[in-house]
Length: 128
Image 1 (cartoon, rainbow, N blue to C red):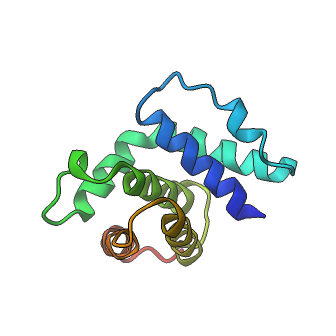
Image 2: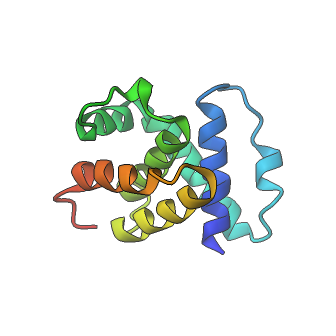
């Protein structure tokens, strides 16, 4: 299931926010299908390659927040969605819905509303 791959990608993105030399392989061991492993690796690689651009997009969507004050789990989810939409051609509604489901498991009760607001602002006008 692609959600499992997204959760793994999210966990790696989250860990990379604290330790860039974090070893990724143990995360991938939980995925059974090669297509899921490939997808998760692609998300992580694109995130790492485009992190500065993603930061700028997120900063543009934040109202009343500084990026360094955003709850780190939510920030990792923002990175996940934007990476998928911008670089992997995932339809934005699919990426957003998946991130909101992941947020329900890993984040706070207020996170889905926060994520929806930021992503709505950042992705406005993008047709994917």
